[in-house]
Image (cartoon, rainbow over all chains, first blue to last red; front, side, top):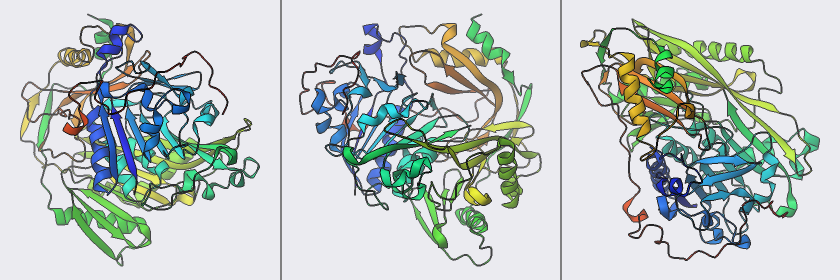
Length: 248
Length: 320
């Protein structure tokens, strides 16, 4: 079974006060989403290693330990890491908003190196985390990380998406692949949440760009104990990145 | 009048002075499960001979059929979903899919599955949107592979006496290559044939102001400018609450879709009561994080102290 960690930031008054993002508005259903995922995964027999809220969520938690952060203690110390906050994209890198300066107010995926310790799946419920035109910019974060689930444009905060955490968790524990779990889970097929998943792949499935899709991480990877989980792809064996997204 | 308020009012749609209020009819769990089973058997192509097993727990029933087909019924709402268990990257639709053809395919699939069986007198089920799930890839050297359409998801909207029932799609059909069914979802709270009341609808301006009050509560001590949001929709209608939540009436609401412009780009869906008389709350309560997730000294609660960081946010990431 899997271990997981959850972080959710609803309030951004301290970030606003810095002047870095003066209109970083508070979110609404952050903890409905986080609690839903937490309860669903624990109900499925998986183990929560940590759940941090608001100012207990730090930029440092995703920032690689090898680059001055502490991800080996948090995001990279669990099998699945989920965070719900404001997101955006800067030159192909995910940027995430925090309400405390440890060690930055704004996180940047340029400093993420995930999977070298443990984590297989990174899930971010935040806007515009992945630039659909430039997914290869995430090449370096895949240090045995299997998949990164995010959004290629804006996401929604509202009454019809407050159950998405539970939906993703239920899908993951029902035997759906991680890729299916994310797209189906965060979609109510009304508002456009722009889900996308990027996965690390081996050369054996590249096939000159005519991909051997059935053998890909994207097609086969499940949460531990819920079906086939593909083996880690070490950086030296990583050949291409696949991605799957929904658009309306 | 602020420009944002004007934008909302200008986008008003489906407005009328008076709207009938309907009681949501309770449905026996056995009936819900039977209905879901019929649809699941139909999806599986096993009408009449479907072998199944039902497990009830946590406010839902899971119906397991042969060939990995399964259905889930949500007791609070009666909503259900059927999944056929297709692997996401198998049975692909193809490299070039015409959107009109996909629309036709999902409409045909919906008809074949008889999704109109839920439509009662005075109701309609209309096509709303076709979603596409696509995939592609790129090598470490930047060589892109071919893009493929994996699935098409047709979303359909219920109308009750010509008013939309907003919320998650009222019905969805997911199709894979060869017009195989990948999944079906139905969110349909049955209502009584006769209304229990006729509600006088509040003027759009009044509810647009309520929407803006709700919106501005997200920025305490600050103010949004008129350019911070676009209005995607401001509609009178009914609202079907999330599928894990019980509901007793369909009464008029205004639904606003506000699309954020700025560093943060979270969009907001705000629902306010559309009549002076409130028949049932449409507010979705916020939950708090679990007690053991909150430390007494916020920001200092973690067991480990952070390392000092020499990170420069403007620096390019180092190659691996």
